[in-house]
Length: 209
Image (tube, rainbow, N blue to C red; front, side):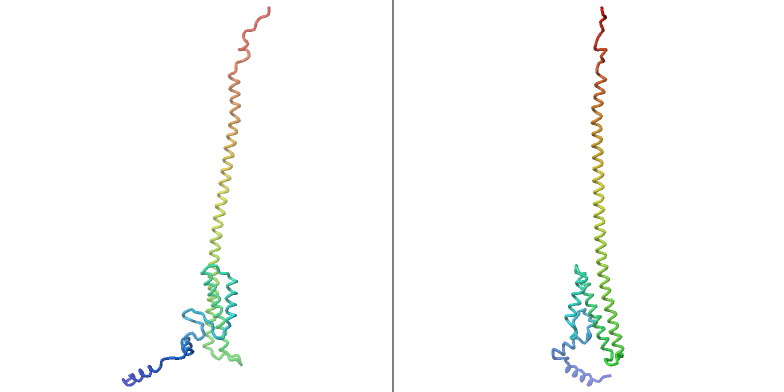
């Protein structure tokens, strides 16, 4: 158990340690928990001093042009893809740092296993984002196909309906024409039936003297 004197001494010593005072020291201290930048809990991707900005931008442009994101969700998924790919490359770089430069033998087994795990994690994250992007687009395509199919079905139904109406109108027209053609014939027959015969109208025939 600590004595009162030891407690006072520890408190006095703690007051002397105020942390780094220079800007460089403060920046270094702030990144102690993310030395290799492979597991930032705030999910903020930053480039390390040895990394090439031009290659990073080229990767972003290449994946964006390849997948052509149209919506905000698609932009997010593509961004996840190039972030995961960059972190995978970074993990492989740190794996090489665990090898002896002369012999090529592994000299830091635990760190190598850690960076190998990060590589696998970011590979899975890349393909997860890619699969989600493809799934999203397939669902969108299926909805469009379904809409077009319904549209074509509705158009076909309207065409059939119009054809049916035209046939019906044509049938009614033929029926009317047939009725008009029958009417004059009936009139002629009635006129012929009501007309007097020639014998009735001529009267009695005179006998010759």
